[in-house]
Image (cartoon, rainbow, N blue to C red; front, side, top):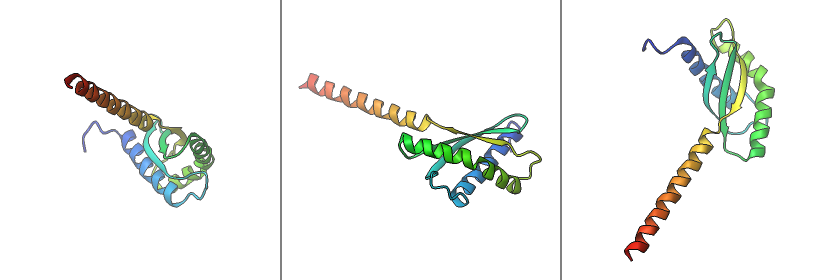
Length: 126
């Protein structure tokens, strides 16, 4: 394992894997649908963790998912306590990750620009 791969990064990766499993298999909240965890950032003292997620739904679905995850944070933290061998299990703060939507939008803009450039070249040649 590389030396620069710090303990906090390993803990964040482990928390992400365990949370993904818990959300998929243990949570029964109907507000929480298909959730993808995109990353976890753990504070240096391991007391707080930002959990970034994305969903495949509308803004109202995202709002419901956010409320459901906030409600389930204590449940998830208590289950993490049993799965992880840590003295302190961080408090979970769920944050909606807009980077996926932003990436899709940028890709669409690039495709549109390429299509417009292609049609402009065809009219110039014709």
